[in-house]
Length: 196
Image (cartoon, rainbow, N blue to C red; front, side, top):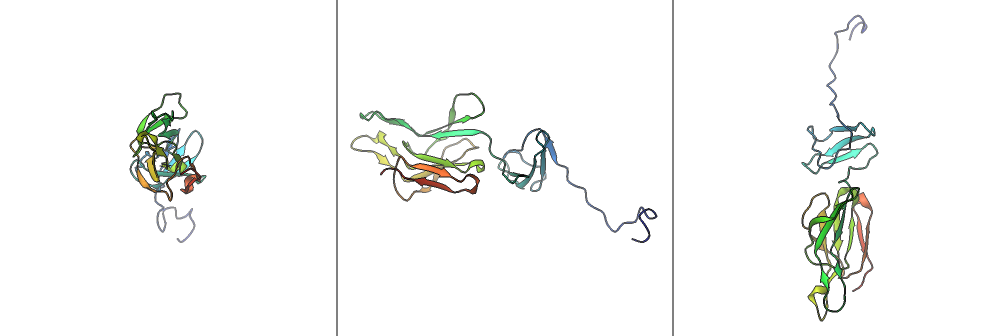
């Protein structure tokens, strides 16, 4: 531009586009918070000051990343899977149910869904805020004498969505009474030990 800005207030070589306005709310977005502007949408928590950016706009399964780099989770849901009453006298009962609770609310559990089979002494882990729960191994004493049915199968659920488990795949060995852990959002789950 020629001259000074003061002398030529209307001369410019282009314009700067408007900055998209952020959604402002007293809480955090969730996986089911669907941004109207898609990927890149901004969310500001007016209570905590946290800022979130949408990095994956999939209807009802969005990914919001905070300025601290951690994704928004599915909330405070806890699940437990299968089990049984082991009387060891031929009258054992084994269940295939999945129960859940909202952890920060005093409540009774409710039915989440069902496993693909009845399982006792199986193990489970989840990848934390990414919302997948995995259950593996176990046995079904309900089949009775002369022995149990043992499993090497793994089931999975999406913890934020109520429903039945689906088959994930198989473990290397068939076993029960295993331990399990995960490294949370980095998506690796480990099953260890157990009996065969």
